[in-house]
Length: 218
Image (cartoon, rainbow, N blue to C red; front, side, top):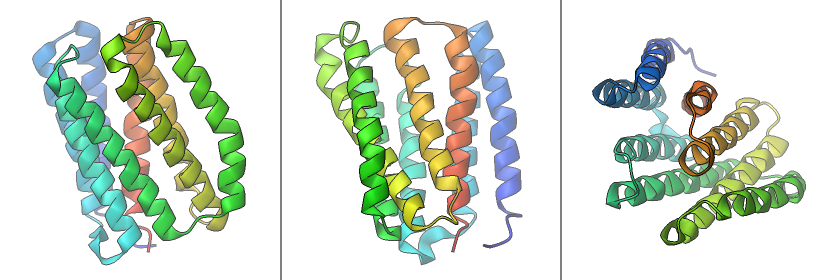
């Protein structure tokens, strides 16, 4: 494990930006929300890239996932469900593919992955049914595909942890990401409330910082 001196300033920047983002969300200040969210996302990307992850294939894929997540965050800044929304969903879907690819490159314990699937596949089906009545018809396929991919990513992450117990950050990162997406889905399709953002945004950015910290693993 390398020294994390390059990680810390970026992580601190993200944490400060998230606090600003929460204030902006509470006050419903559109420009401030865009500024703080973009800054927070740039922070987790910087935290990962500061490690110079390109020398190792699995951490390279993690870095790709971070960059795609930044693109997704920017694409989802506008409200509504237009082209930007579809672009954001696509970017995050590809980010999950990149993270899952990283885990397969690192190495998977198929027993652990299978055990995770036994729990998470029914959970994903439950979430899909829970959302189905409130998701517009034109978004049902993209949302369904997203649920499948993030479930696969989390299973892959837990499988990778089963094969590499030293990487305790992996299960924390994937499970926090899953939890944050529940908050996003609740906010967009079920019961909009600042409470969803109050716990969902810190959970999301913490997950991304943990992914960024994995870039420092060699």
